[in-house]
Image 1: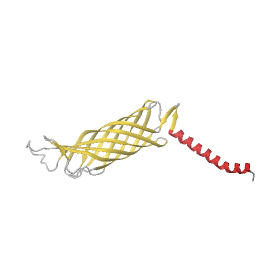
Image 2: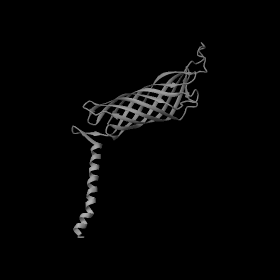
Image 3: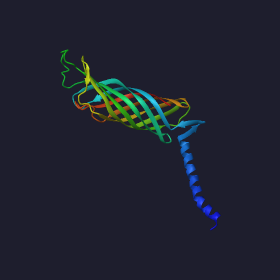
Image 4: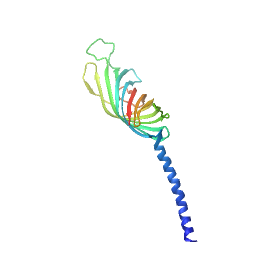
Length: 227
């Protein structure tokens, strides 16, 4: 075997592998740097959001709870793993509030010294673990649907009896898990800026407080900015 033939046989598979690798890399770069009308489309985006919500506690016994306003705020992140498919996560501080008529208090009593209700406020540091499906983007923006879970760690738990002062809740649980469903739109403001608007429903399926064993739920208006 001549040196020339040996060199050809040695470098032929290497050249084939290099060509294949370059083609795969180019395809990956094309996905992660998609261009639309000459403008790069980001498949990894960070944003900030603030989300007013209406929350409530859900009891399975004689307690009676009603809704109160709360809100969450924090960081969002969308990570693309296929065309128009994203893993959506972040870190949010979320306050879920509710008004409760405790079962052990005589609500029919007219004695002003006996409180008829208490306000409950639970605050969590939450991480969304959701999948976001987005439509094709046009000059106005794109629509999305979202489904997944939220995992939360309690930051604080407060209650306030009617006419009294706030105090820490005795027996509030440390962890919260919830099922989240939502949708909305990302409105294109510029090449690198989008306004997020949407609605979401979050249904907690872990116990929030030992007394009465309620679970938490809320409906939120989602407002944010992606960069």
